[in-house]
Structure formats: structure tokens, C-alpha cells
Length: 196
Length: 239
Image (cartoon, rainbow over all chains, first blue to last red; front, side, top):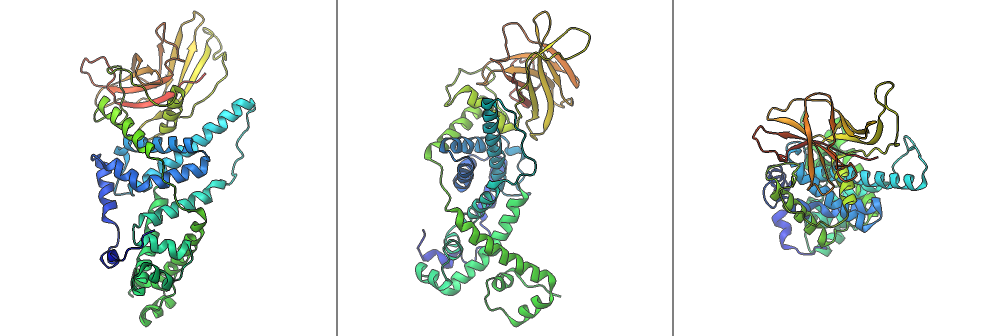
């Protein structure tokens, strides 16, 4: 958890992270190091999605690796004007996870020598959890101090006054960060939905 | 009529005091009231997301593996989206099994591996043919379904790769059909694709178990008989 104070005033006016947009453009252009930057920014989200869906560390690591390799190979198809690289990578991750689950059930069917047809329209029990993980990913993507403030306010249920005290930040600054975070999260989640 | 700005809408959603003009506007503006409601819903979504627990970072080795894989592919075929080592390089040892790679490759391009029964009689009349293996083909650029490839065994024992795909001539070369091994190192060219349906006799000594990847590449007319590295369609044969 971040508990510093100095950056609060400096970043209070920042709206969208300019880093993210430059990353999107760099990634689309295949700039050296952009895959690593994208990985640093989004791999916890991808790995957590895979881990929760597959329940197996080794498989989650494989899926994470496949996802970023596929993202890099296919970067020509990524259009930074239509969404973020992060959202795009999450879309690839979800398909890769679905493929891994499908391969697993195929293997099970083969072992059982019974061909079960999938039940149509069955709700995906992992979908709700995946949505929560995506939301947490968007919150982390806000970067400090906003990610910390939003986590304290909504995940841990602290009051704005408690957050101000804990982070040694003026109450007005905490509230300003929360307002801007809500706006940024709304846009980010819309974009994430659009890119899936 | 001027709508409230984002800050005012967020303040209202958070239950903070706002200017009287903003408060009055939201009371009478459906659009701004809807925005506030959405931002309130978002707060509920955030509280709910707290139940998911924090994100877990992958172990350090994962990035190293990605970096190594991407670097080796870039070295093999610079500038290519789906690079191949094309038999020009020494075999490299990768982590994991060949089978794992194939499943991974299939997942990466969205290939559906179709298991099929062996020894299906395919056609009435004409020579009887046995279906040895089949692959669903996928367009590597769009991951869309791109037809099928089947290996059939003729009465005389020869095996034939039958490709059915929506043929579109490439601007920058001819389409060449290959069988490739799971390491994407060894490969054999079967010939050029010139229509939606094509049949290629598989040279003796090559079997689909050892060369299960069906690959269609764009080959420039440069006299170089090796794979260009510019693959457009792939599938994995399964029998």
C-alpha cells in the first residue's frame, strides 16, 4: 500500500494516464520494450484471471505466456484508436483461457470415452468472478495514489476522513481523487467491455 | 441547456454537495440523472469487486519465457507476424513438450482440433478412401474459420492432403501448402494452392503424426524454395 503524500498534489489534476496512451501507440508500432511495458502493466490481471478460472498455477503461467506471445505476434491487428492494448490483451487472455478449459474438458471426455454435449445457455460461473477481477485491474491501472484511495474507499470500506488521515492528505484532495477516479473507471470499464 | 460536467456528476454520485444550479439541472435532466445513476452503480460494482481479493502477479519466470519465445521468433523471421524457423536454423530446445506446443499453437490461433473416427468411407463410387486425420483451418490474421484439411489414404496406400478453403489470390505471391512438425522446424512443401479445393499427394516417408501442422503461406516469386515465414492459415491435423 502506498502511504506517501508528496505526489498527491502533483497528480491531482492528471486525468487520464498519458503513459497508457503512449504505450498503446508504441505497442501497435512494435516499439522495442513495449511488450514488456504492457506485461508489467497488465500481467497481474491476466494471470489472476487465468489462475481463478483454471485453478492451477502452471496452467495459468502457460496461459499468461501464450497470451502475451499471441498479443505480440498479432500486434498488427491492434488498433490503438479503438481501445487500449491492455483491454486487447485481456480479450486474448479470455479466449486463451476458454481454449484451455475446452481442451481440458475434451481431454476428460476422451478419458471417459463419453461424448457429453455442452449444455446450451448454461451461465458461466466464472463470468462474475472475471468481471470482479477486471474491475480490480482497472482500479490498479489508475496508479497511485488513486488506486490506493479507491481500494481503501470501496474494497475496504473506509470513510473519506479515515483515508485522508491514513494517507496524510487533505480531505478535499481525497474527494477530488475519488471523483476523478470514478470518471476514469467508468471510461476504462466501458473501453474494456468494448474491446472484449 | 448546459449539462453538468463530469466532476459535478461524480460529486452527486458520491453524495457530495454541489452547486445549486447543478442540483437543479440534474433534477430536471434525464440524461444527467442517468449519468449519476450509472456512477452510483459503478460504486456498487467496486464494492462487489472487493470480494475478488487482490490481483496476483505471475512468477518472474513467466516474463523470461515470453521474452525468450518472442526473441527467438523475431530472430527467425524478422518482420513477420507468424514467424517460422523454416528449417534454416538449428533446432532449439524449448520448455514443455511438443504436444503442449501444438495445443498452445492451436489455442493461440483459435484452431479447433477435430477428433475424427478412423476409416470412414468418404465417397460412393471411385476409389475408396480412408480418412486418416482432419484439421479445422483458421485464418491467422482474423482467427476466423478458414475451411478444413483432411488426410485421406487411397487404396494404393498413398496419402493425400485434401484442402477445402475459400481461396483468395495473394497480391504479393503464391499460396503454398506445407506440413510442419510440432517444433516448427521440419517441414515439407506439398505444392501451390490455386483454388477452393485442392489435393496434394503426401511424399512417402512423411506422416501426419510427425508433421501435424497444415500451413498455408504467401510465397513471393523470388526463387527461394524455403518458407517465407508469412503464414496466413493454419490447422492441426488430428486423427
